[in-house]
Image 1 (cartoon, helix red, strand yellow):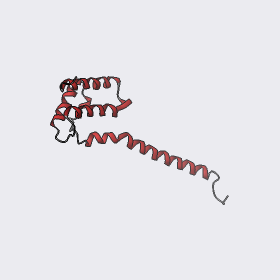
Image 2 (tube, helix red, strand yellow):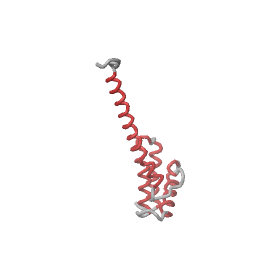
Image 3 (cartoon, one colour):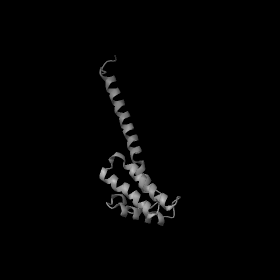
Image 4 (cartoon, rainbow, N blue to C red):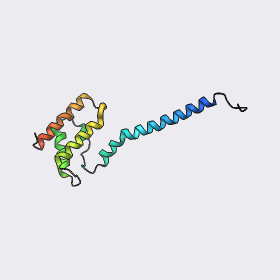
Length: 120
């Protein structure tokens, strides 16, 4: 071993490499975790009203989504499909972080949206 080199040099190098790899994985996870937030913000489909998914009234959520979908001239699908897609996208994006109470409100909003567009 060269003179002056710490015998634990290799252990330290491995630990540093492992820390760098973890940081890279963490950054990759973080970017994957938040890509959908960008979709919501920059979506060409609908311009959503502020905080629409935080409303406590499922009918109010449905009315807001319907207004947004019908007003949009950039959407590619019919208004009902665009509105429902955005609602389902939000529910899926929230995943396990969505409380049971919030999930119930959003699931009822789907029913209200179907009613608003006169779908069964």
